[in-house]
Structures are given as C-alpha cells and as structure tokens.
Amino acid sequence: MKRRRFSSDFKLQCVLDMVSGRKSPAQICREHNISESSLSRWRQQFIEGAPKIFENGSSARSAEAQRIAELERLVGKLTLELEASKKLLSYFPSR
Image (cartoon, rainbow, N blue to C red; front, side, top):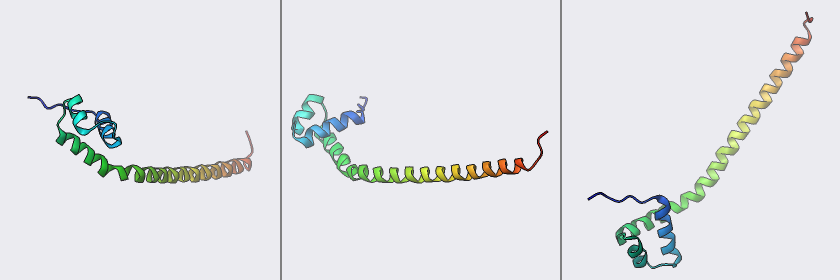
C-alpha cells in the first residue's frame, strides 16, 4: 500500500480548523480520511514551529536592513571613485 502525502497547506487548514474550534478532531479525520495520530502530529509540529514565525520575520528584516546598508555604502564608495576619476580626467588635456 502506498503512503498518502499531504501538502503543507492541507495540513495547516486541518490544524487551523481544529485549533479554532470550527471542527472537532474526529470530524476532521472523518471528512479527510486521516488518522487522529497524524492530525495530532501536525498540531504538535504547528505548535513547535509557531514561535519561529515571529523570530524569522525580525531576523529577515534585520538581514535585509544590513544588506541595504551594505549596498548604500557601496553606492557611496562608487560615487566617490567616479567623482575622483572625473576630477583626474579634467587635469589631462582633451585630444
């Protein structure tokens, strides 16, 4: 017998239905023909992973802010180099 695979969206919807109280665990299992142990495991994974959602958002923004600052420094450096090159070229007679 081949194992069924469920998408993360499907698992999330089942867990949200259960956690919100819209449906009972038994009702979800009957409707989707899944075992209660699978649903319990998905719920546990959801609870364990929930704090990471908020951590990743701030660290992603922090990494993004660092990248922006790095690019701004690079733009500043390149602007200075361009200005210096223009000034240096102004000292040489044009052909």
